[in-house]
Amino acid sequence: MGSPRDRMIVSAALLIRERGAHATAISDVLEHSGAPRGSAYHHFPGGRTQLLCEAVDYAAEHIARRISSAATAVKALDLIVENFRNQLTDSGFRAGCPVVAVAVEADGTDVLTRAGAAFTRWIDLIDERLQADGASPDHAAELAMLITTSIEGAVLVTRTTGNSTALDLVHRQLRALVTAASGDGKA
Image 1 (tube, rainbow, N blue to C red):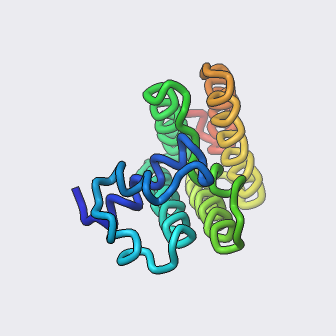
Image 2: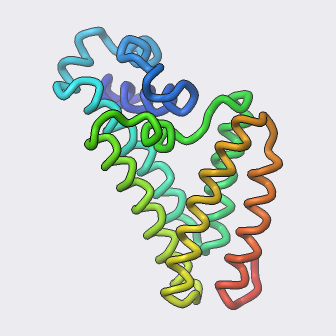
Image 3: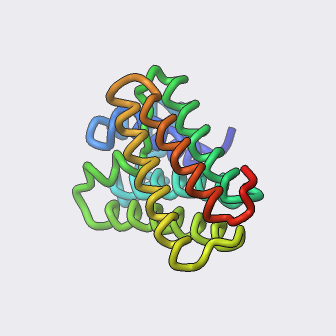
């Protein structure tokens, strides 16, 4: 199950995606993770800001692994959307993206910088995947940005409306664009 530190980071990311950053207190993270009370001060001497930064890094790595593990850009798109769709429906449409939640509520530049780095990493990985599938560098860069921002927006609309219409539509439209950009017509 991991060390108390690892459990706290995962718990923070899970709680933030449902409650937001401001509504997630260290005491909530301790309770959710089952970590001893002294763990927060021991493992996160930078306090709440350090915990938020590391939760963003964890979420960033989770999505980056999905993108990197996909054989094609279409498969990466499918994996990302499937991940968000599952977490939304499994949570009764309460769980969004923890990186977005932290970015929207960020008080300090450290947390905002980490969130920006997460988005940049995802965009870069999608760009690389698109180019590997045959998209031109300029088209791949634009499409990678469109994919990331469209999915994040669709997750927000899906979460707030309580139905997956927006996510399904965005997935379908992006899938067509990614398939066309790859030049092979295969999905």
